Length: 318
Figure (cartoon, rainbow, N blue to C red):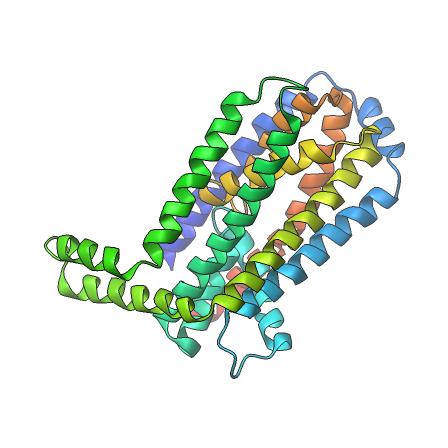
């Protein structure tokens, strides 16, 4: 527990440094009067759009996770309860994948460790496919109308290709057998057995193709819903209607935040990359400042989950 707390302290310190650098870069030339004026002219419905994105996105994400769970013994209400708890507890873990780790650990005692992590793996893969798909289509639609996107488009195509290879490897039995014959020479039997158990748990989804297709469709719907809400927020703050740009850049930001375990919940890192995207979209400095403030306020609300962490530490010491 002490080692865990030390690692979390490091993560929070790193998050604080990233946030301070971001805030210094954005607000060093701004006065409080300018910031307040920019916030005052922001319509109230922008806050409603942010609330809708937070709560609606959380619900749809929980529904997508529930679709991958075993059909017996897991009603939707119970699955959503676990999902909501994990979303808050996961806010203290590095990267935006913290809640998925919490859910995997929580479900391990009920469905088995291997199946729990297999569900988490498939859940992340379907999310990545949806994000890359929407970003790729949007980048093609943008073309070179705004600025040179050729390099970014090549990156997305390459990353998406690697993701497809990863999916193919995950569900290919013949290839996994060949990999096993190589890996077993270097891993101890106990570790190898855990990997094989996880492999078999992932292979179960080969017989659940309908569930995989529905989960992928729900993932795409979730992404579209969140991106429309983000487009509305940007429109409310800047008066610019930029749906294609949002669909192109936002999914990539979330993928990078998910893969980079640097700050709790990706706070600070997400806002920094968004600020770069906003600049490319042509938003003014004051508008980027407002977007950053709104994002940080709603992101920091998730850190309520830290109370559960300290509560557990207190109970373990008594």
